[in-house]
Length: 421
Image (cartoon, rainbow, N blue to C red; front, side, top):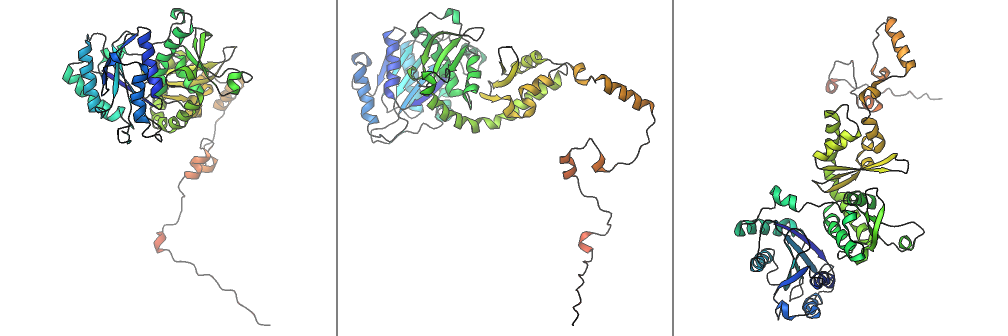
């Protein structure tokens, strides 16, 4: 079982998202816990009113909505009663057992999964903290439920392969706004909250792997001037196809304002993982001395790192971005250091013979030097051409004085004699 937690400040949007799935016969509402009526006897507004009564008790809270999805392996045939039992066990374990919550079973993907909507505002107006809820309480609950109900464990390769994010196939997306929105939404629901990106180009480097892009349009466009953002599907040639969808129309509202806040947060969160990426690149180049760019990309891919190249209309590479799927971090090459920039990566992946080849003039000069005997002379550290200025400055000072410093006699200063006139 895999649990994914989203928090927000609009219970209406979370409820509306699931109720629309029910309307389109892509989901059903299985259970309503801590409500006055059963789920089948309540309409949209009755469900919403229960939640809004609680959220109104703490209007200062910036987060008041909990939206959880529990995902199961396709091999597991779970009836509705068993699903509800799992949900009740899970919600008690994470501290939401006494809160009102709704359980929806979705049928729009290849694996069974459910959505849970609740609020973290309690009857006394206090709020349940959701900070690190997924990392702490949810992880403990997940492991215990897997043992108790005999579910496929999230760590197993079988389940991770079933839930692996796959690129969209533009040819299989039916024309129309609804189909395009649903296809893009599945990608955004995983990439936006899980990956650590610090700019829009870095986010697009991840989305491009799944044939999606976040588009600001041209500087003269209405979208750009009003700080808007559109999400679109890309074909094999990176051309934008299908109907563009406004960011504000998606459930999680991945607008530019929202993303800019994540950029600032992710900048510090991803830095501890830069070392792994640099080591992986250096090792791949060291292991394959004659590696070209394709060999490097293939080697990094085996380590769970995707390489995204930025090219101009003439197919010249002017930028490179690395997406580490294990740490969920995205780095522009130049941000890792000068030697990881696009220019240096291209230089480092040239054929070995091309790297060591000397110009004709240099080769002639070198051959003449070999024929002429050279007298070896002692060279001081400052005269060695191969030493950098940093090495010279950091070199220890050599002294011919044999007497320890502590035992040396201090020289007395001579006082100037004053002559009387």
